[in-house]
Amino acid sequence: MEPRAKLWLEQDGKLVLSDYRVRLLQLIDETGSLADAAAAMQLSYRRAWGKVREIEQNLGVKLVESAAGGAGGGGSRLTPDGRRLVARYRRFQDAVAHDLGDEFRRAFGA
Image 1 (spheres, one colour):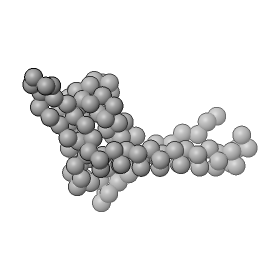
Image 2 (cartoon, rainbow, N blue to C red):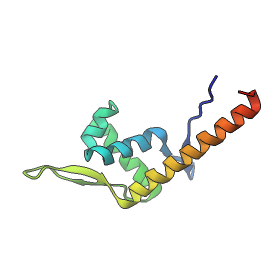
Image 3 (tube, one colour):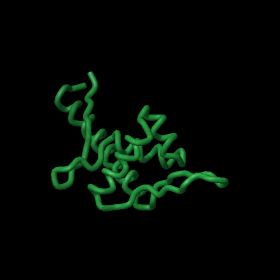
Image 4 (cartoon, rainbow, N blue to C red):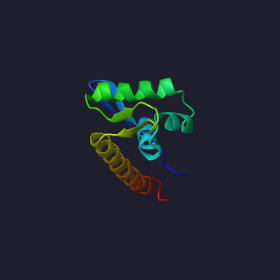
């Protein structure tokens, strides 16, 4: 057996962050493209953009900057606040996974 946990963060009763949402933000940062991040997660562009706007609205922080296409090409990237948020969530996620493993071993002697 192995323990598993799903994490999410709420603010004022609204879902703000989850593994799924942070993965979307991380893919935007890695690919430089909202469209590519959406495709990697098998989401429509519209749904992915809606998730980003929802996170930003619920947090009151701009997380993604986008530039329109054209001769130089467009793209999307995380703002410094967006990068900090992803990094903090990942650190939190790692700490929870570590503690979960410790508690699992204590409870089940595994």
